[in-house]
Length: 528
Image (cartoon, rainbow, N blue to C red; front, side):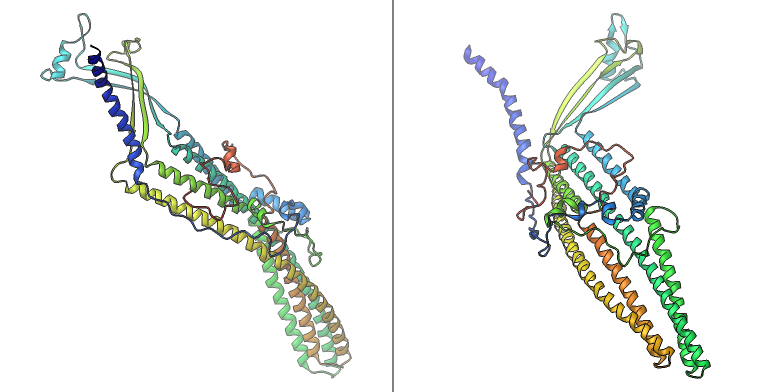
């Protein structure tokens, strides 16, 4: 008897064993032929210094008002950060990225749908279904009506169980891209601050050029009067008079060109501020002696945390790593659970009779790709390629940021030294113009000496002004290259950003779903 029972139990357990082996095959078999990922080439090491330059302080931490020390410019920058249309467009990009997180977040929760339906059916009596229904009674002596109505109110459940973190990794990737989009907007903020400042200083330089032309025109008008007086005294010919007149006409023409450049520079600022053309206030009298906050470059590794474009590239790299995991999960089985519960009856008056009218059901399915997985493989390899692209872009962005700092710091220093030399040249030329004017007035030198001396003085002043403009522009660009200008005003959002897990904001290295944070080691692999 016991042998019979044991054999009966073994037969009863046999279907369960087969089902267990079937589940194991569904889990293991699809993952046996996952393609190998390609590895990315390691990038160059970030130097410890900026070609020998380091400092304890970093100018990127200096606020906009403190760095520029110009209330007028500060007001213009604040207006630009509020009214600039490009920033408003980028704010909408952040909104889109924000909504993508909400969409991805909802994907791994169950979906519930509620609905109602009604229908009618009349099977033929000469069919098995019709013949059976013709004999059925729902109560003693009560046959079902013909045709047979049907009324249903039910709720449906659909849920893909996130076994392999596929849906959560997609959510985290969307959160990282949201953070990257915000960093991209911050980078545009730094560029906007630099553009407004550069155009502001360009306006000051153009004002000084106009002032220089006016000064030279006054000198040439005096020389013209002297030439006319000497001609009347028959001491010179008409030639000096006409040469001075021609030089005056040339400089008056140059003034009109500079005035046009001023209008265009003002309108570049107005466009950045999001307003229609109007005069821009500035104080140009102190341009040549303008001094801003001293530049402190800090150490190169600070670029990784101070530059918004590097932080954006880092977020994109981390998101690309999660995309690879999402694509890999498609090789594994997916567990889907469906269920229905509701009320169903052929007559509305019986619809909510319980438990007689209650209908329900639940089912689960484990589905795995087996044959013709080319599309899944292609998506997986494409995700791998995009991850390598993101890594190379991170390396490229870091290299570009380091190079920008080197170039601009060097430019600030060299142009500053050039300005000091040009000031000495200018002193000598101013003295030569004075001497030439007195000699010409006493008919002891040719008019060409006066003309050339005045022209050299004007050119030297123009070069000095342009060199100063280039130096100031380099200072502004260095401030931006170090990451300064991004904290002028807090980002303006017209929506409530979703809560992003702190592990994503800090890129917690203990979270296996996140690509390692900066700085990336040289042996970082794209397939890790």
